Image 1 (cartoon, rainbow, N blue to C red):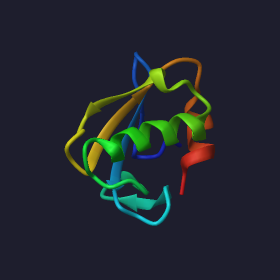
Image 2 (cartoon, rainbow, N blue to C red):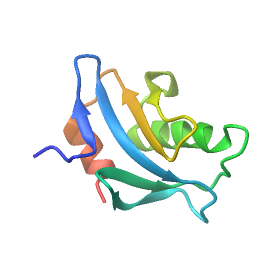
Image 3 (tube, helix red, strand yellow):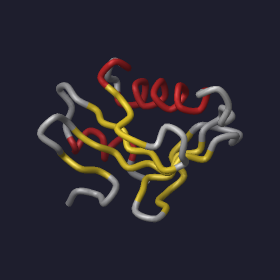
Image 4 (cartoon, rainbow, N blue to C red):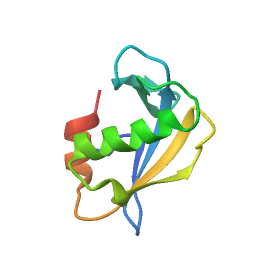
Length: 98
């Protein structure tokens, strides 16, 4: 069963994320309001948290950072990110599911 925070689209896979900047450590902390909640070590300042999020997702999922982009929410805690390329829903769930 596909988690509520993840959606397969014709272009790739969309993740609904709730991000909490300024945390001690960057990691998945659970679910929040139908989103995957991720704490980010970077502050929500000058796009630092967004840059860290993309770099962290790229490293965790082992996909090039250029294959991950924001769909919406760059200036909000609630973000939608799309990942495309050769990656499966199962792979993402295995790595990111809380």
